[in-house]
Length: 106
Figure: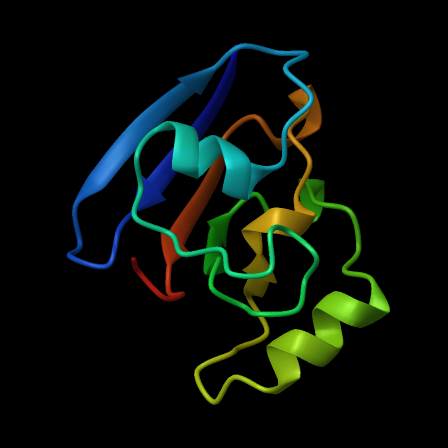
């Protein structure tokens, strides 16, 4: 199981347990857990609706690619700990990740 701690826009924290090997990204997984993410671009790193702040586990994430960095650069609330959930693939390597959702809600 992959364990991820998610703080939503209201400050509520939930611990998610996700089976390994489901081949989804974090945004798709959050939507499956019924988080109200708009995800307008469908995971193409263009809209930043799935913007999140990484609280723990940054070192276990792959480096952000150019399109993700360009999109995050358009957000005034982006920080050095910002990522797009659509660009984080679920894997055992991110077990223990803790994030705060910043992006747009439905």
